[in-house]
Image (cartoon, rainbow, N blue to C red; front, side):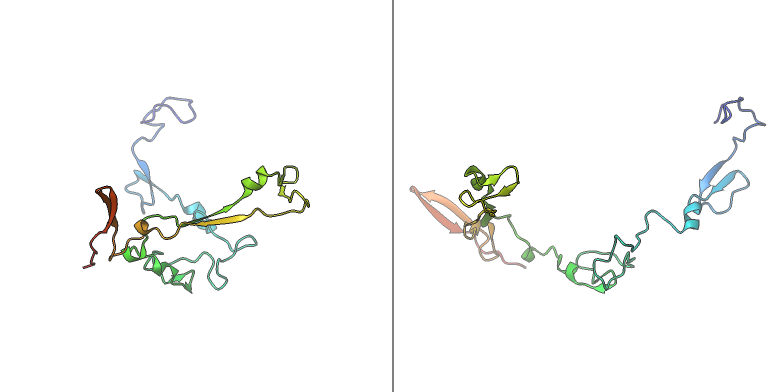
Length: 186
């Protein structure tokens, strides 16, 4: 309950201040004069704006030129469900299944690719003033060498239903590899 007028001039009295009532948002009609209706969205509704409104202007365009800019979907956009995006037929989301046969079991690294920047810098092939790599003999601008190392297939990281993994143990000092029994999907 208020104890002082809003402007701070006088104390609250039964004749100067109305303390029996309130205000509510979007209530429809006011109830018996004690509840004031407050329409918060009226200012923005008159302007035709709600939150942010995307506009196809000079700095914005559709991702697909045959699609609709700021398209309002009537159905959810979800994996394994959406067949159109922005009004254009598109089945790319249908492949987002969580089926075990389509997933990789273990994150594996079978090869690496390295630009040998550091090797070229150590040999004096980087000009700190121009920010470019140069050949030491000719002074020509060069690109660092790219080196790819392949490790081969990682059998432990690529299990299948028929070979779900391997067990390695020693018996008499010699390591023995035994494959686990095959898994069968039911």
